[in-house]
Image 1: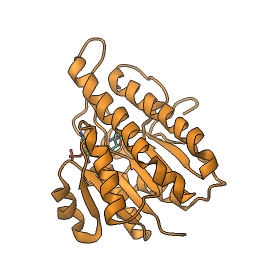
Image 2 (image 1 turned 135 degrees about the horizontal axis):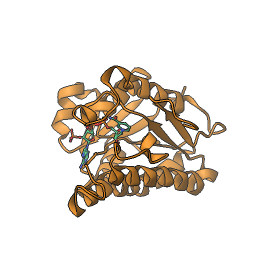
Image 3 (image 1 turned 45 degrees about the vertical axis):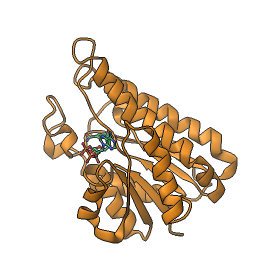
Length: 233
Ligand SMILES: NC(=O)c1ccc[n+]([C@@H]2O[C@H](COP(=O)([O-])OP(=O)(O)OC[C@H]3O[C@@H](n4cnc5c(N)ncnc54)[C@H](OP(=O)(O)O)[C@@H]3O)[C@@H](O)[C@H]2O)c1
């Protein structure tokens, strides 16, 4: 497997950190975009390139991509992992929380893809992996806040746009749609899948590792890894 230069948003903790560890173990070079780049150094030392990236600050998408190209060379892989969950439904939450989720979960990946696209296409083997959710595949009721569900559906749509817009240049995109993952995000979430039934972050990182091994001829638009038994998912 030819090593990659992988950008991981929100890679200092949670699922992102598991993905970074797995990428390093597989011999890839990694840049993490994080609100606190110093947290990346605390976790990974100097093995990982760190740059400022905040999903609510539009310019930070361009500046992170530029920093990677300057310091490491053109990236061939972008993993949109950073995401937030806010309790927004018809009966709870407000515009501010809804807007924040759109910013971080949808607009930030859009901006990162837009900024990285020339590099990803030029590599001839570019990859975009978007960490969506089973909540990006269906609405299962009030236990999953509607605002979050909307943003994850949009992230799946964004993934399909990537596939179409970079196909001839070897760019492939995948939306990974996991059920509950055992991270801080859902530690206190009422009605979440019981802890012993949640996906370990390393299991999702394993899916990423598989995707990064595949040739252009194996396009994988979506991978659902459900923790629940549901029809069709
Ligand atoms: N946990 C689940 O059950 C589950 C299930 C399916 C999908 N997912 C998705 O998996 C992804 C990773 O989530 P997780 O479970 O690892 O959650 P987490 O432990 O809460 O981590 C969230 C990550 O996103 C980063 N982040 C949050 N707001 C940001 C912002 N404004 N700008 C840049 N980075 C920001 C955080 O960085 P800081 O350290 O700066 O806060 C952190 O690295 C998310 O997209 C989430 O929606 C999670």
